[in-house]
Length: 432
Image 1 (cartoon, rainbow, N blue to C red):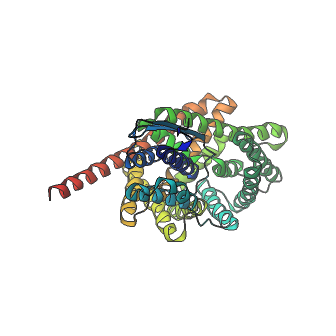
Image 2: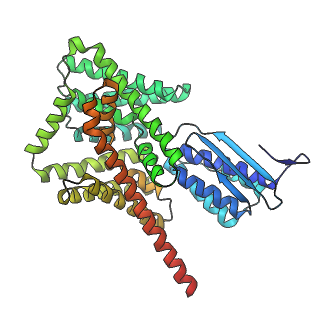
Image 3: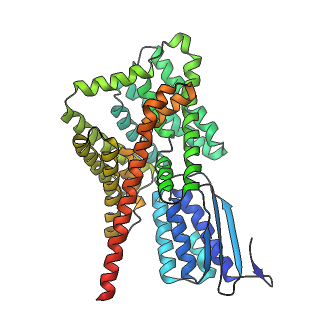
């Protein structure tokens, strides 16, 4: 509800209109709800507003406040689907800091927001980023040369479909199902022709193009950081999206079942175990580090991280992979521990760069956690749900939950330590 006084727009209206649009654009660019709420509250308090309430979701902005004259105003709006553009998010963050510090005239706030422009990569650079990232992931899933070729063909198909669907605004559930149905059909035809022998390598790799990986990390983080409502909603949304992706695979599987003689998921997982048992551990680790660098660099381009920040973003993924490998060798029977420690280092690396380079930590955090996203476990659980196979859920569900909790606890632990370090430094400065 907008507040007008004798037909004139009040000061509080300008402020909340700005906060509403800023929050909307930040969420759409990939910001975490916790970060958005904090920015809005600080801006409102900087301009003397009180009783500020933020009830924001990843799909809807809702804020209210009162000014010094006890005038009340409320704003709400829908948020478009998230499309990670970390360069734009960086500039929106910088704008929020500038507004909080300098408090420009409220009538100019919207113009300042409208002036924010991001230097987006051209479409072909984004496509190359996806091709590099998918090739690295395919190799992690044991793709051979023929499987790599089919994965790249499917990646081009998915990229073209994403551009098409973004223009016609088709529901995400429908686009996920149709996209994965088409990719699985292509993989099946190559499998039936004998060109590839590892069907699930192709399917799982291309599923990562559509998987809401960052969102699944954020929803677990929200559950542990006081945003339980948003966390539950996002978790259900993520699970539904992944199930529709897997449903596209299952539909093709059912359509060609009598003629394709498909590789089973159990056989694929057994092949993974057999490969890791027979291959020297040091060779696996070296290859994983190289592939992680490729994947992180590719996704950093997809996230529109510009060249001056791209190297730091890619290095973050490598550091996290090295920490993960090191602690996995020490605590190999406790995946929760080494996942949590790796997430802690991802958050710590991001916070250090945020302080030294004066940029938002999200810019470096999202690429750094790419190696930790348990997309394969989510797919296995979704296969169990779609196919009604409880053994898939029982085998992989607990590991998935522990991975998400471990990652979230790593973030929370790092954030807590950084908070108290900053508080201690501030107290020390005030005493001096």
